[in-house]
Length: 277
Ligand code: BJW
Image (cartoon, rainbow, N blue to C red; front, side, top):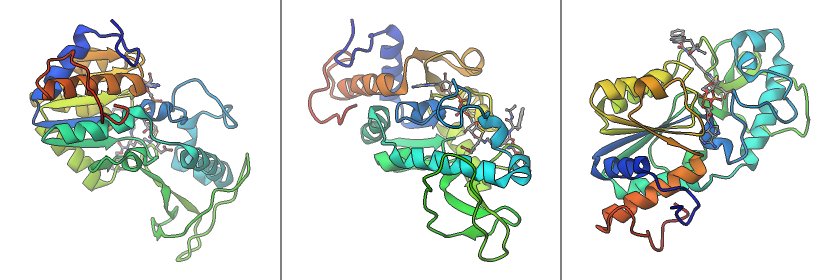
């Protein structure tokens, strides 16, 4: 029977809530699907918006920036505008709520939009950097400038590094670049040490992030996936698959965990104070 958010109750949802309720340490890993209901397009979904004729996976590379910095910088300017306009949704807020219900919860995200932090999650590891931080293309000098989003729909020349004059780029991780050592190191430790891993809204195509669920599972964790469709991970690294959007399944799941934490069993309504979760 659908709950108050319209999400169908399923044995999988009950089982997932039970695993989370019993867990000491939970790791949540998120991909672009997590931000979709905040209005930020995924990488491999249907192309939409002003830049829809370009393939995002072709723009997020050093070669693309070298060949046409104004194209890549223009694309990031457009995306920074979308990120600034976006707000965390009920799924982000549910994870903040879940953090308060369990002993340990960390988030490892591939997203560069900072929405988990804006929602209030305390421990967020950014694997692929942050779209609102900058460095120079030639030598990775940190560039601590307040770079405005420009009202343009197209190409845009990047500013120059104050230290060496090379073009400024976003401090994100492009294909072929190493992930920040501290972030991927911590993500590995968290994956090896968690009891339950929740994998939300990723296609599971991009490594090393895509290797984390299998790592957690081989160390004994239960891996629960939330996605609108099965991913590369579902068959080989996932114990429980919950089909649906992050913005509907996460709140329903956390309401169930909350019901169980209050000793009322999986179907007890969560009552007040769940902040949309
Ligand atoms: C919903 C939903 C809703 C929709 N609710 N769900 C091992 C094997 C093979 C290849 C490699 C390997 N190891 C490394 C590689 C190479 C490469 C790689 O993985 N290539 C593959 C494509 C084959 N990896 C790298 O190059 C990485 N670097 C590296 O390994 O360096 C090694 C090195 C060491 C020493 C020296 C030098 C190098 C770097 C990867 C960087 C990825 N960067 C990007 C751009 C970030 C910046 C930016 O944002 O612009 O990261 S690419 C892009 O893909 C972005 C994403 O974070 C990443 C993952 O995408 P994600 O999140 O999974 O999104 P989608 O769109 O693919 O999926 C969305 C999902 O959501 C779908 O499943 C939907 O169904 C679902 N969904 N709505 C819930 N409402």
